[in-house]
Length: 567
Image (cartoon, rainbow, N blue to C red; front, side, top):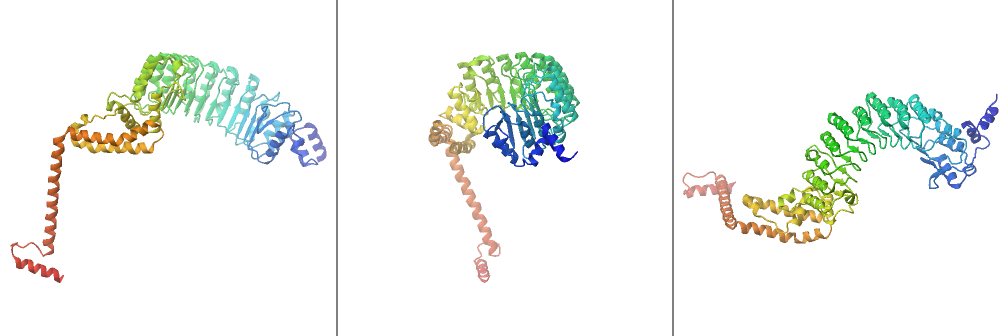
């Protein structure tokens, strides 16, 4: 059988060889406009033949999207994908009216540059198993994402390909809104037992249930050296029993983010999670999302006891059943020196003024939290609640109380703080823009126009230099920070007179001590001058040859003077 015959048969099959034959034969100068349905597709295909790096195949007529229409041969698209050495991101969300999907898949199989593959549509009757050569030959793929309704048969095909063609470079695997179900995910989880190098596993909205949790826990426990840092199980129908099963496996990972929002987790689930976190000495967990579950006050109290010694930085508890009593149960956690939490979300929890007062109380003295998010009108907070937050940020009862207020938190309320009262937003702006020390200085100056110096008299004049330095620090910081508005400008203008007033109070409050201190300093200066003269006299006698036994011996002094002239 000659070469020409082979070429003719390849052209009839419309496989990769067909397009290769046309491109190398008499059709060497194939023009993109002749094999595409529109100018946009022709432009993308032309760039793909050159150095295109990102390719979107979709049904959206937007820039840089290849929209498959009548006249588009997917085989050509696949052929140039297979030939590309620059394409690293391929996203498929629609086949449109394209034909020759098998040839398109064959082209993908020949590509070795793609490192991110997103499949957002079914393969139109073509088994996922047809992509086995791609996974076998591509050593650059680090992200694989599915975003369509995956049935059990397709899930089994995906599991088969992952298991048979282990892709060691794969770091991120996503099944988002695929509705895998318990059986479908169980086969996927089993195939993942040979993928301990995975760093991210996203499984949002797949209804994996108890069976899926059991399969995932078995996989996690089986990984000898897991790299998993991000696990997303949003919307999977996980109940207390499912979380109890899953919790046993997460301690075998390097997990930093755990997303469990929109499930059915209650008290028993919180207990299992708390016990796991409490005993997880090597925990690196920084982000825990429990939004949209059935967590009540008792569940929160149990959870708070488990996270006390963790490195948690973000905690999401929105859309639960938490009241003021539950929030107050977090007091020990927030007062702990080991508390690292920076963000707390409690949106759409009706905790009212009682909860606001509880939050203000437990955050007094806390130095880690910077963002507290809730929606005021949905949380039932009124004036008493806001008054508690105002006192948290700036307690005007005394200078010391103002100094000990919270100067760390920068957000209270919605992200844009549209429902947060103006006076509280001003304090939050200070916290956001200044360090803790200078935020405290600004609040003291604002809350105490007439600084009372009497409490400092017990240290007498020893504290006076510190008072002067304090005003100098306030002045320099006000010059450096001009972003907080007119109130800062007014404080800056009044600062010199307030400094003089404070110094005057020292003098007025201790007049005798001030006068005595003046004469004491004069005596000290006289003694210093006397010591200096004694030293000068001794130096002079040394140069004269030594102090005479009879200091009245003029002849000795004359001899010494003559010796000095000779020298």
